[in-house]
Image (cartoon, rainbow, N blue to C red; front, side, top):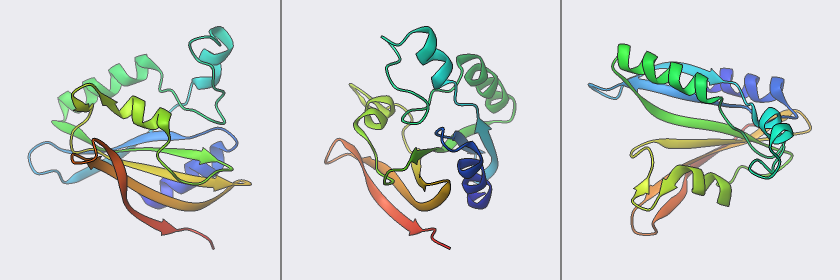
Length: 150
């Protein structure tokens, strides 16, 4: 699945890519990769005040697509195991915006979910980092990384 995610990240460059890895609710076993469409640029053009960032520095999954994914997950008794996206010509880090989207006043929006951020520089995936909720720090912290330089 990582290979498919890296290919998606490179194919969608210079826009950020995004998607999900889903798992069975019963045992957490990973079931499938669900690439998503980044519609950040469309929303930015329509409403730059509420969507100030362009697709090269943010991602936004179409709400209708998220509803479809919710239905798929309910039908197949799945949950979100990993949420991934790429950073364009930048390091793989959990940005302030990533943290805002991943948390609310009670903590993580998707408890137990791992976040994967891929650094794509000049069209090539170079680094992947995983982040998970750290209850002591009340934020998502680095949980591992892997260099992708080929």
